[in-house]
Image (cartoon, rainbow, N blue to C red; front, side, top):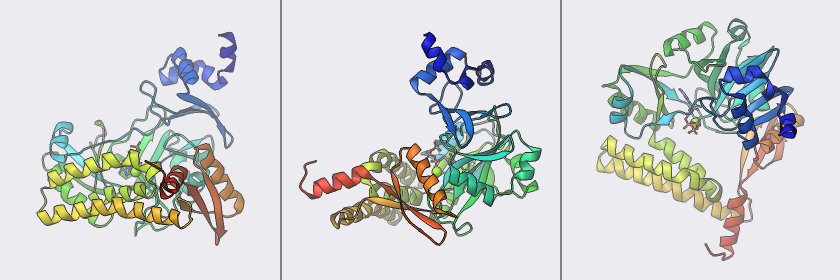
Length: 384
Ligand code: ATP
Ligand code: MG
C-alpha cells in the first residue's frame, strides 16, 4: 500500500483536487489504478486526464496544474431522438432553440495561465488544433475578460484531419462555436446570452435556425432537417434556451448515408460499430416522415448505395495491390509540424505515416489494418 501511495501522481495527491472535483481522494486513487484517470504530461502541461467518466465528472475532463489548479470539464454527451414528436414532447416544456449541428470534431478551448489551448473530445491536447484555433480565432480579448470560460465548438472544413466535410461558407478550415461553459462547473450560458457575448467579441457561433414552442417544434424541425440534408448538411441540436435541460440531437438521412459510406470503406475497422445505429435511425426517420413511396425508395437506394459501393471500391483497391488507407490532409509550415501531428496520432493509437509534403500541405496516410488484412485474406480464399 505504501509503495502504491508513492506512485500516485503528485497532482492527484493534492487535497484541493479532490475537493474541487467533489470526489473523495480514495475514489480518485482507485480510478487511477483502474486506468479511468491518467497522468498527462505533454506539450509543457502537467495534468490529469479522465479517460472515462467518474461520478458526475465527464470523460475528457482535464485537471491542469497551472499557476493554480484549473479544471476543464469534458463536453457532455448529447443524446439522440429517433422520433421527434414524442421525444420533444417528453423532453421539453417551453421553447426549443434549434441550432445547426455542424459535422466536424469537438474542440474545447481555454486559457491556461497565458496560453490558449485546444482540447479534443477525450481531453487530448492536439497540436494541430491548438495552432489552427489560434490562427482562425482572435480570442485574446475574450479570454482576457473571461478567463473562467471555455469555448466549445466544432472544427470544420476539408483540411481537417479528423472529420473532413465540405461547407461552402467554410472551405478549408473554420471554427463554429456552440457553447460557452464555465471552467470547473461546466455550466453553460443560456443560448441568447452566449450569442450576444460571442457577437461582442466577433466570434462566430453555429447558426440558430429558430426558436419554437415545443408543440410546433417537431414539424418545423422535420422540415429544417430535410432541407439541411438536401444541402448535404448534418442536422440539428435542440436546446432549452436557458440550457437547464439536456440538449438533444437529430440528423438527416444524408448524414446517415455519408457515415455509412465512410464506415463501409473500411468495413473491418469501422463498420461494426457504425452500421446498426445508422440503420435504426433511418427506420424511425422514414416512419416519422411518412414519406411518399417514391421518397422511401429514394431513401432505400441511398442507404443501399452507401453500404455497397464503398465496400466494393475498397475490395477492388486492395485487389489491385493498394493498401486500405485514408489520406488526411493538413496544413503545415514545415516537416516538423507534420511529424508532431503524426506523433499525436500515435499517442491516440492511430496508425499513420507521412505520405507527402507539398505546397504547405501534408498528406498523412491512416492505415486501416484489419480491413487491409482481412480483405486480402478473403480475396485469397480465406473462409469467413
Ligand atoms: P459525442 O456525443 O461523444 O461527441 P458522437 O460522435 O456521437 O460523439 P455527434 O453525433 O457528432 O457525436 O454529436 C455530438 C457532437 O455534435 C458534439 O459533441 C459537438 O461536437 C457536435 N456539435 C455540432 N454542432 C453542435 C451544436 N450546435 N451544439 C452542440 N453540439 C454540436
Ligand atoms: Mg459529430
